[in-house]
Image (cartoon, one colour):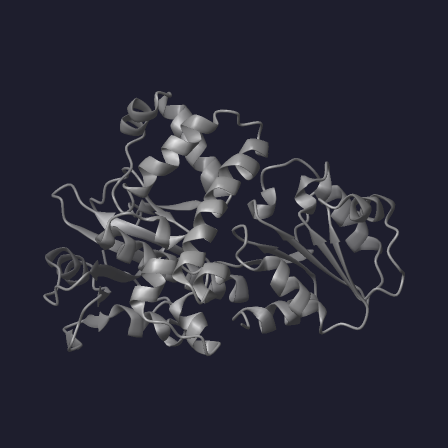
Length: 384
């Protein structure tokens, strides 16, 4: 299926180098090859392939190549200096696409800055909106059972999707994590991932996790940072800058593979979190306007699941419910006190309605049309 960012990435390739990052097996290599079909003489080079590595090191590709795809090149020592040299000396007609799963470690390694030489696009699992645009629409139950990674999502047999997931998680832990910063405590990592599957959507306690796996809290935090760098999980943080009395406390954690989440309510919230994050990334990568996904919680215990901010300006509070159509008291409180728009997404909802500045919508229908929602595009003054 065609990915929703294809056209924008192709347009950006005509102007600068493009970095394409995202989880393992999310479709980066497939998309790179699809984009290569738009060029006359493309060349795909994977650092993990010995022959390709020799070509990369010697810069021995044909001079008439009009697209160079470098896959997993962030594993190369001094890769940023290398890319800078290639970009600065290449023919004007040669486009460069760089792909990788570990966030390309763009800001984690030393080397000359690539600022001004590239655009960055983040490819995440298939969302309801992307599936609908590609003619591959699926119902909510399908997304909750399969997640959005292309292979299990498009598999005809649910058993095949289950087998993919077992091998996928095992491969992540045994291969990617093992090679990332020389992590050797695979037992602790395995246990941590299993524990996190049951703690999605709740504020994280590093102390509690450390007691469960037998490691120091700072070690647990570092392990979660590695899981985040490898696009296995992502964290969102409470907003305390723009909303009075919000607590700067623990983050909440979600998986990029929604089907890994154990509890059904948390799985629905994970589904929404991932779809919101994907849309914010898509818009930010396209227009450069910074968007954040966070949540709200006050000292008195009032909370709402998500807060979308644009350039640090709160724009939309979001609450997720499995079946309750009554507006959440916490959502109503924040929207009234801070003059914000509100959105309550309900998994099982017969009748949608609006009340004051809050919309109550069915989850899958709204997520399927999220790209048309303008409330997270335009900044307005936020009244404290």
